[in-house]
Image 1: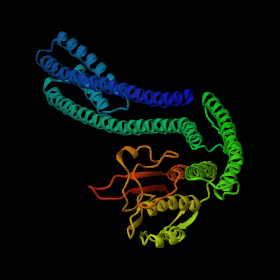
Image 2: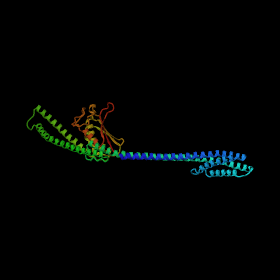
Image 3: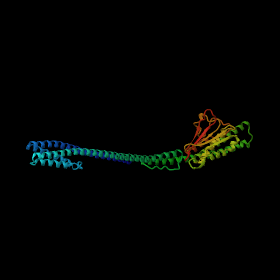
Image 4: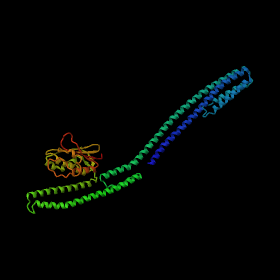
Amino acid sequence: MLSGFMLITLLLSWAALRSWLELEHFVEQSRRSSEQALQLSSSIRELAERTVDLERSSRQFIVLNDAALLERFDENVTHSLEAVKRLESARDNPLGELPGNWRQAVVQLSDSLHQSVPRAVRAPELASILNRLSDLNAELGLNARRWIDERRATMLLELEQSRQHLTRLVAVAVVGAFMVALAMSWWLARPIVCLERSIERLGQSRFDEPVSVHGPADLRRVGRRLDWLRLRLSDLESGRERALRHVSHELKTPLTALREGIALLQEEVVGSLQGAQQEVVDILHHNVMALQRDIESLLRLNAVSFEARRQSCHPLVLRKLLDDVVRGRELQIQSRHLTVQCEAPAITRLLDEEKLQVALDNLLSNAIDFSPEGGVIRLEAALIENCINIACIDQGPGIAAEDAERIFEPFVQGGRASPTPRQGSGVGLSIVRELMTAMGGRVLLVPCIGNAPGAIFRLEVPCAP
């Protein structure tokens, strides 16, 4: 995790550093361009001013022929040539040959004034040179503005390119940081998911698969403790089952002797029985049989709990499953003159057929016992979002509201009596719940709409598409 955070920090720092360097480069380039543009403008403006002074002093010297005016002219020439030198020394030579031409014109003007030529001859030449200087000043100003505009356009283009480059750079850094964050999340979530699955398996009493967690050291340590817990729970579950088998066996031995003794008394092998004696023997027989049924139900519930840990999924046709369950109870259905209606889509899914058939058979058995003579039982199956829903609907007395919460507990029977006498032990729905939990599904008691009679039990089993 620390490495991931460091990598994210490096990516974002790299993007920030590159952005800062790009900004510094652009600011420095803009500063140099501004300084050069200011230098060009200042030098060209100075040349324009010096040209006016040169024209004034030269014309005055021609008229007055005063040496002081010539000295002033020479001084202006010196300052003008310094400005020309600055223009010529500019980077990239933005003005081309114009500063050199201006220098030549000034030198020519100076030579003309220093020559001993009559005034009438010098005046036309002086006017021609001064006009040329004015034209050169105009060209210098025009070229300088053109260069400044081109430089500004170039800088704007470079700014746009830098902006696009920085945008791509930041996008790459953000995407890279996001990918690193996703990798960190996956790396951290993987052992957490493994722990969750291991805890779910422990909650479902599936102790056959060892707990193996990869990832940080603390999570691996938790995985090892969970594996120790798995072994401990497996030992406790094995001990419970073993104790239950031993207790059941120890109870069945004296129970068999009691049954044989009661049978001898009922057959009056040891002598005839009076009315009260016969009643006591019948009570003993009834309770012994009830105790035997409870022991057998307890053993069956324990066997179902053990078998529920084993998963065996095969392609199963849903309609065929309903038909097989109904066919197994055909004799009971005919004896009660019942009608069983099956509705199921023609689909095939990977399911544990044995567990699902046992669960559905228990629901159908209860529905047969509680349905009135000549009633209708409906088995409806549907596929909803990769989940098989199977409803068993009867027309019996239903489940009382006070029994709805505990009807799935072992040895709990509803308070409402069935139309016919039945010898149930109250473990059928518990077996259904055990099987559904093992398959990753659940069994529900669905409330009836309005005052409609009957009970609705629904199985929900997840399945692969």
